Image (cartoon, rainbow, N blue to C red):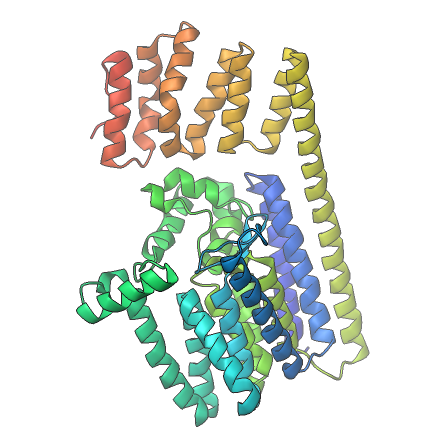
Length: 494
């Protein structure tokens, strides 16, 4: 059996485990089925790409066009913001506001740079484009892009030597200089400080910490994993649901990122260890085939795989489509025997069915959510308390721990005199957003007073919960100040 089949089977098992995670461990099913829909589409792209060949030169032209269009849009919007209001003027990111996803211009440029390097160079045409792309990488400053480029050039230097060794050394030196200029910890060095001053004045970019909070983000994943109940230890919190355990267990407000910033860690925490195993096997097989045969597409695949380990570009559909397209091109085989076509067609059918099913579930949930919100608005206008209560209960089942929604529903319940439900909804925030809950606690205590609840007994009953929250010393002091204000009792030990 060709090794490309093994990669197909590995992805099939990975998709099956995503299904299990979406049903068993998921906190927000709507988000999980959206991610499942995307992964099913990616599987289809992988199979189609492994059947239909695209020349490396065409891949190169496509990527260069993408970079040029993206750069043109970015520059245009920087000069005339009102023309393209859906974009951002932030120099480090090129943002397309669609479901909170965005493109990183520097990472896109890094992908284009690799596409040029792995094809025969035509200095008259390619050199100006290469310099332009490298300039985009520098001003966008994506360390993950530099890391991906260096990883690919290092592999090429080992495999092909010659020009690639020189290219790797030159890129390494330039990358080191750029990273030093952008590194906050090196601001004390006079020469670097002067360069940073120019950078701040011209590009409006502030220096960043060397690891850009990754030294905090990555340990946070394992901290969140340790607190998981059994079903989530095995199957994760559900695709796209990391923000809930992250918010719950973050040691500080900076450690509550909605993404892990590493695709492997993301799969591990959201879908479980078995899912990670099959995805790792899939990637390993693609790399094995591609590097063994020195397939040009494998270097683009490798760039994205490395890039995905330090940034959340993996959460952007455009980059993931390219990732699986290059994976398919890497294992493409011109001559296929009949049973290969039958198996690939059958698996493609499975992926399509998965995409259709998860897509229907996702869009039906979104439609139901819209219907219920419209119903809630109408009930509020009519002041129909019974319908309001029932509708909020139905909405709560769909988004059980969405902080903004819980606050909104609590306010509506309070406005219609249902203080018990208003207090319950506010208290629910503490389950996955204990740090944010502190700002709502005074109002929560006021609600308890309205209901004639003994505040001292209420706080005594919650002391055990408060003790489990990962509050900083300053936050504990604020919590105690609130408790003392209402009962003269402290809530937590400092």
